[in-house]
Image 1 (tube, one colour):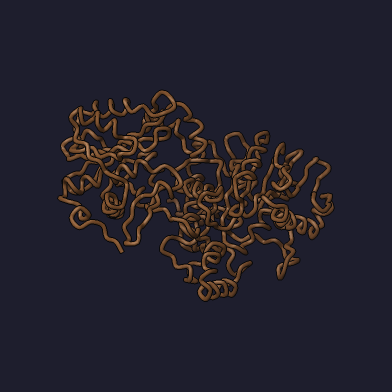
Image 2: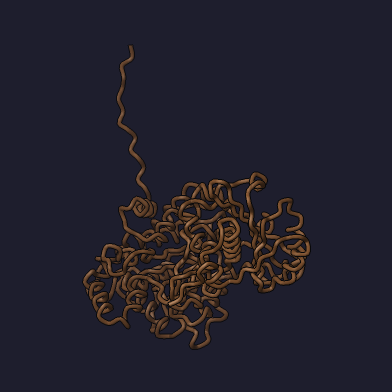
Length: 564
């Protein structure tokens, strides 16, 4: 009779430090804001399924880059002479940037947007990344630039790099130094500060560009020029570091917003890395327990004492509050937060596919948003079932000419959405409203009403009225949209919206911000948003008619708008 043998249980493989940080954040062992949580989830998802897109995480490459920091010493204040020991969040960033590779074997990430609070070591980290690109990235003729709009700003990051070289025997023996240049003669490589002041941004062959304090850039010139300079490099990278800003027309706001859409999965872009630290909606900036969300280096390079002093001064001097909110807690002041919670938009129930053929017996209200003849027009059908669930069926139209240019401008895959049938491209450089009319007429089901914004829609509304449709004008002010906007938000929160996972609607939902009047009435704002929101506006417009025609009269039609 055989005797039973015992064996030691197989030990579970330890996670790589980059994945460990992501796991710790998602498990709540490390406190982080939602956008950082999404970045961590993205990393773990890509570890599991990224190979399907040709993505590979090279642990050895990540370790090599992280290990490079062991050769460096910090040079300022109480940290002078200390080793540059990366904190877990910095390991996540550095390891991600150098560990992830694409199907071609070269670096996956070509742009990195990093937004954290003041004093968290952004500039030294970026400077060290530049030094790695100079001496350890296996790139002949590497051109590394510390780039900014002013010579003084560009010099800050470069000075950090110079100081680290001076303090490192291993690097100082290899790198030639002068006041504005670090050079490795054996590979014909250099690291220099560069600004737009001397108009020297053109003609560069950029291996790495390190762009500091992006929120202070008055325009996108530096970013655009550096990105253009990478075109001939096999694994170039642009690293943008910044605090939060206030100007919603700036390149920083554009890249901040785009980064959020990337980590949310709204806009797929495997070459864009985003680490956006900051407080979440509902967090109080005076609450010490949430400060770490914007200050991952709290207790290391930024102290509780300093933050407490900043908050105390801001509370005593209201004029300073916006500065403290922006620089220390990554709150975009004089801006408007994303209105819809995308985690609620993305629930399996809301995004589950459905067949419109199954909705034919339900009441339906349509809406046309034709405000733009050169970008997108939206025709949205809104059904309601007996249980109070609403089903959104959108169709979008765009002019065929200039589609690629608009794709580059808005950074979304319009061409793919056309191929997949989510957008109908009409011939020419303006939307052909006859095509929209024909699609409406070809629909087997007839809506109870078709609402429309009178801007640009009077002619097609008249034609459809002649075709037998009931057309109702809905103006885009607080009077018409306040109640349905509030109701739409409630329906999302209570899980009563079904959108079927339409990617165009999802992108638009992530773009919506609302404006509020003195009485607290709200409506979507196209002027204050960061991208197209036509589909959501049309859905709210259709809901406004459902409220009136199916639920009686609007409260605003009964009593008018509140005004103070």
